[in-house]
Length: 328
Length: 163
Image 1: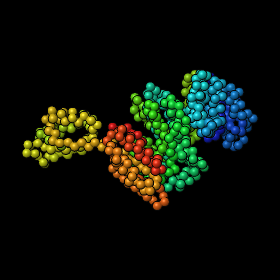
Image 2: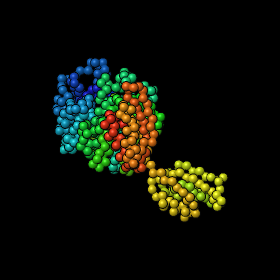
Image 3: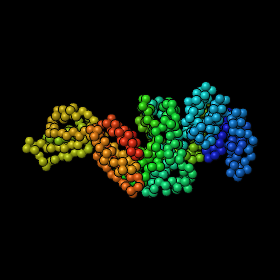
Image 4: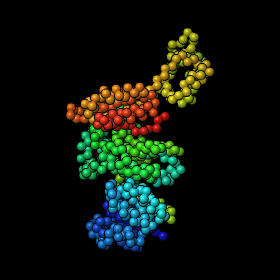
């Protein structure tokens, strides 16, 4: 029996998920609903995903007049794939969507950092109570496996700390500044032109995005109960070219590093520019993300991968969906 | 550490083996073959890094017939480099350094600066040596507090697994 899937959000990530699912030859999943702010596309027998994508591109996709919340509350589905944009303050509308689906006893998979960072405990308890899964691999490190890696291959390993590069925009800016000797403002404009940085880059360059990911890691991996305000946070906007040069002369680069370390009671939870030896595995280039997971048995484990992108993020979402399918 | 070896085959290995067995990291070895002592032995200088167990090592070497002539212990084992960004000169870099040096367990051993213009922020790279890991942590915490007071950005090294 195919699992029925409702996809909420038809932006870059939503499109990626639909594309990836449309190319799968098996019948593990059947997408019965896709919604966005303009309405919903529904078919209980399974949508023709390639056709939906084509119509979306041509702008002639016919939507039923039904809201996302309406679909979540009433449609018949097994897995909710929630891929709406992150709101770091309220977590909405994703938070209400996920809450509603879990209450109905539906599995929820999300790439939305807001709800996980703000309401991890509540959503987890809700999922547990209703005997369903609440998974969020795509929220940290995009394509890079983090949670699945710890649940699967690293199972049985107590994790003592995680540190890494969790924001591709900042890493791109710092890499370009160091390699080309260009000042911060110039590289930032370039990143905006390339679509790597948003028009208002505050969320990335001030480390808020990285901090959200740390909160997710802290609460879900280490069982902490922390929020965005608990993160000691410094962004990259005051990292100047001279600082990068001085670091370079000493064989180091500067990276925006997120670090979470439970350390007994005195936890470390911080986002800050840090010196990384050029030869260290965390010294990754461009928009790459990287994580160093300290484990009790396996020692240091490094993961490096693409932290963003439509298909890359879809890869993480698909892995969560397949995990749910494996439990059936 | 200065040692004296007998001039027979196999002595160098005999002298170095206990050091690496004790977890020491050998940095340099100088074998003074041309400076034979009037006792007929050959001087050997070894520089190595080791956490502890120096006394046991000395005993072990002597039990192998190797003479330990002298050793110098340099206790500033931990060394870390940080970069500061801000109005470093105006906020008195000398005072910042003196604060660290006056702790007695840590000192600033290197300073490099870059000042792009009078009104612009400058950057400094400083290396700190401390007597141990815990002392280094304390020194970095002190530096962080000073930086906060003086409104400087401290770019600290990541935590790396060190041998």
